[in-house]
Length: 216
Ligand code: PRP
Image (cartoon, rainbow, N blue to C red; front, side, top):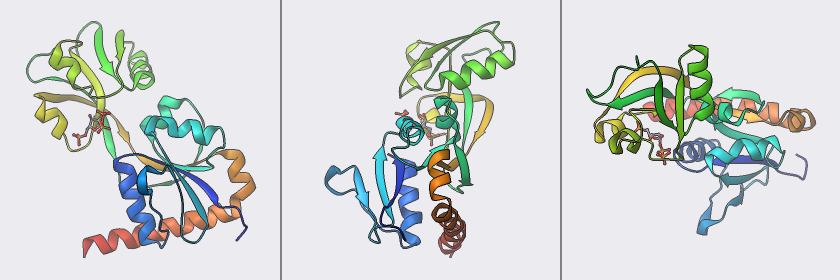
């Protein structure tokens, strides 16, 4: 092992909990106590940064973190290129067009009005279908868009569907599968490829064991 820890960005929220659980099961133990945003694992092999989901590509792109756990939705929005070294078994969701139950035109409008956090995805998706789209950028609680009359439609992630159901919305169309990846800054990977490749092997085996244990 070299002296410098591998620099690793983790996204706040659901993905962070799953990632920490997986890493713990592999003996990589760390915690962000007392609102700390930087944590070293007990072996000193890794230094973790806890960042906002949508900022994660920025940290990895600039090489502040060499590695990160990031959804394909957030990677796409960033417009940046990363090496994708592994696809995790957790965190899969779908990007969907949704609207108020029974109060929309099934997305068949001549021009769509859509609220979304995912403006790049929405623009590119409907451009590729030659469908005119007006996009209203929101940063969260997107389901409120149709509820309050901001727009008849949203493009958003649907995992369990609970948020849609609770707000009287329904999926109109599934637009894309979203997966969670281990990403690397290309230059950082080239400098640290031996250690990173070893870690990728460990994570593949570790994730298999972790999933097996959960099924018991
Ligand atoms: C995401 C997404 C939906 C919700 C979907 O939001 O934007 O709102 O999760 O999950 P579900 O189908 O399991 O209900 P997030 O929790 O990241 O919060 P946000 O609304 O502040 O973006």
